[in-house]
Length: 62
View (spheres, rainbow, N blue to C red):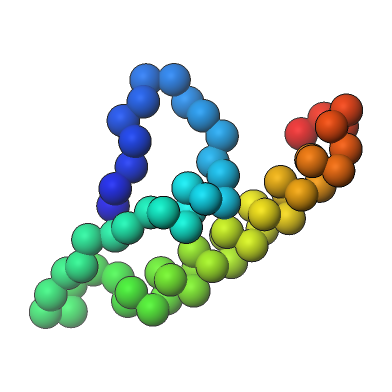
């Protein structure tokens, strides 16, 4: 999986989830790529909902 190697933690954004890439594996080792893709779609949608809610209320706590 490609990730940034930053020293300081940062918030995960929907675009980060969309950009992540998992290394393919062969001979039935590893994860079902379809399942991973479906999960990432769900995570991205949830993050987008949170981002939209925060943008609509800039004074609200996260």
